[in-house]
Every structure is written in structure tokens, then in C-alpha cells.
Amino acid sequence: MSTLLPMWPQSKRRSRTLRRNGFIFVLCCLVFSLWKTDLLYDLKSSGFKITNHAGSRKSNSKAVLPCRTLPGADETLVILKTGATELQDRLPVHLKTTFRCYPHYIIVSDHAEAFQGETIRDVLGTSVSTEKLDAHADFGLYRRLRDSGRKALEISELSGSESQETNWSGNRGNRGWKVDKWKFLPMVNSTYYEFPQFRWYVFLEADTYVMWATLLQYLQALDSRKEYYLGNQMVIGEDVFAHGGSGFVVSNPAMKVMVDYYRQYKGELEAYTDWHWAGDCVLGMAFKKAKIPLTYAWPIIQEGYPGVVPYGKRNDASIPDPRKRLWCYPTASFHHVSPEMVEDLWEFEMQWLEKKGKDEKPWLRHKEFFEQYLLPRMRETSTDWDSENDLDQGLGLSLDECEAKCKATAECMQWSLEKNGGLCKIRNDPGLGKYKANVTSGWMYDRIVKFTQDQAPCGDEGWILK
Image (tube, rainbow, N blue to C red; front, side, top):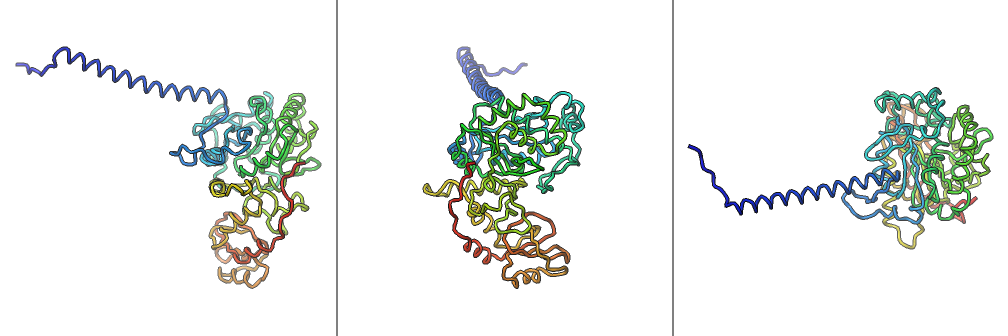
């Protein structure tokens, strides 16, 4: 005997079915609409090729960060140069910090790939001659990446997240560094070819930190209609150039001149790049040949890690221009910055922007950066930290004994001791230093405060215009 199931009257059953189908239809339309909106956004974004995010500081906040709407930000394109060997370690921190302040940016590398929603552009494949790409020894890593993707990388080739300072001539044995010198001219060429509408082009590296508010104020003081190539001046032989790691800036007219020159003399420039070891120097030589001189922007743009910038007269520090008093100039960039330091600096800059009064100047001097960022970090003794001291005090001392050596020397500002009876060192001018395992550092905080108070008042030091 079959079981009889209750039945709705025919009219009600049809009505219920229609309502259910109608609901499903509306729901499908809504889902499709949202998907289509995202798809259209992705298509538009990929077509424009410049990332433009909302820029909220918190992921669940709709507020726009103050750094994103600063004067001049919308007229500036930031170009971050990186490489496949360092990208996974050094790029993520920028995606969650500095890039949220840039209305317009692109990322160029030696390998085209998608990374955490970003398009990484192969800057070599579109500009460097085919014979170089296919046969030159410097492009061995490039060819492996082109053929097999990221899986072609060996563990030993990855940079790691910790920033290690190289010597002034770079790490010539590193495969990623060998191909890096070939990126400078192509990235200028391809950037202007695709994006000729910006007033300013800011070129950075993955271990560079830019004080965005200060840099934009600097650019506001310059005439973007003129030919500017500005950065931290360095010299190799007779060639003066803007150091790539410090960051450098090019105005729109200068970009056009450089691109025209590059296209006319590409063969000669590639031959010079092949012979040379520093791509930023090759670029500087090309600007000089194109009749665009370098604007010496040090110490506004400089190459030092925050903890080793020579705020005092550090007797082992070579500075580009001894006539300029670093303490009083605006500060716009740091180099050799680890991902952790990038995040720390960004948080500091965001807090400073939020707290500063309307009547306060919208940029920081080195003096103010030292007092507000570095000095508070010198209150306590730090382990696994090297304050980079230069006066040896001997071996086999305890922490208390090493500190006592500094206290007994009236001029001493700081001390450090290597673990397990290692060397004790002191220093007579202040600096925070940087991470180093098995070293403990301490500072004479009251003496450093007095050091800041004893500095002569700043004069008319400001923007370097030519």
C-alpha cells in the first residue's frame, strides 16, 4: 500500500513554485551583477596597468589615508624595481603599507608574474635586444625564469627578508644582481612609453623607504615643466649619477628626452651596460649624454639605513657633500631597509601625519626624525642589536663593565658588547645601529638628549633646487 503524501492545491503549488523560481532568478542576477562588476574592475585595472587602491589604513575601514591625498600625489607615478629572487620576501610589506599611500604605482622586475593580486611586469623582455636576452651570460637567470617560472629558482638564490648591506660596488656574484643592472634604462623607456601623462616619476627599490609626505613637498617646490633628474649623488670614475637604492626622481620633460636618447643610441647603451657593473651609473651617464645634469639631492635623498645615518660627525662616514649640514635638511629616503623596518617607518609616518597640527610644516627634517623616531628607541639596552661603534675597549668584559667604560668617557654616547667575551666598543656620536645577532647595545640617553639640545639652530637649509 502506497503512502499518500499531502498535496498543495494546484494553484498554491504553482504560486509557490513561481515564487521560489523568482527568488532564485533574482539571487542569480545579484551574484552575476557582483561578479560582473569585479570582472569589469579587473579588466579596467589590467588595461590601465597602474594599481589604484582605496588606501584605507585598516582593511575594514572605508576611510582614505591622509598620505594618499597629499598635494602632488595624484600627479606622481611610483616605479618599484625588484627581482624574482627577492620579491616574495621584500614586496609583501609594501603592499600593506607604502603602496596604500601611492595613488599610482607599477612594479617592474626580471620576471612577469602575478603576486598577491599585483601584476609584476617583465621590464627586460620589452626593451633589451633579443640577442642579449637569448644568449648573454647575464641573462641566464632571466631565461630560466622565462622557461620554467619561479620553480626554476634555487633556494641559495633567494635573498631572504633580512636586509644585509653590500659593499659600495654591489654583490657582483649574485645572479639576480647581474641582471639587475640591465633594468634601469629599460624601466625608464617602458614606463614613459606606457604612462607619459605624469608630472613626476619616482623610482624606488624594494629595500628603499621614502618619507612620502616630505618627498611630495620637495616635488611641489620644483617646476615639473623643467628637465629634472635628481637623487643622491655618487661617483664612479668620472661618472656622477643618482644612486638607485636611495631612490631617484625624473620630471616628465626629462623622461621624454631620456627615452628619445635611449631609442636613438640603444646599441651603444647596451654595450656600455655590458661593460659596466652598475646600472644606475649607466643611467646617469646616459642622462649626461642627453644633456640633462643631475640635481644633487643629498642629504634630502640619501642612502643610509636609519640607524647608521651620520647625524653627528661620524669619523668613519663618507658623505657626498661635507658643506651641507645633514641635521637641518629635510629627510626623504632611507636604504637597506628590512621589511620589518619598512613597516615600522610607515607606522611612524602615518602617526605623524595624523597628529601634526594644521600649522605645522608638512615635512620632517633629519633633526626631527632623529628626535621623534630614533631617540625614543635609545632608552633601553637592546639584545641582538649592534649600535655600530668604532672605539675598541678590549675583550672579556661583562655587560656592566662595558657600559662602565662608556660612562667613564665623558664624550661616549653608546656602547656594544659581543656575546661570549667578545669585543666591547664605544662611540662618541649617536646612532641607533641595526640588527646583528649575539651583540648587545646600550646608549647614554641623557647625553644623547643633550647632544640634540646642543646643536646649533638650523638656518635656511631646505629644498635643493639645482
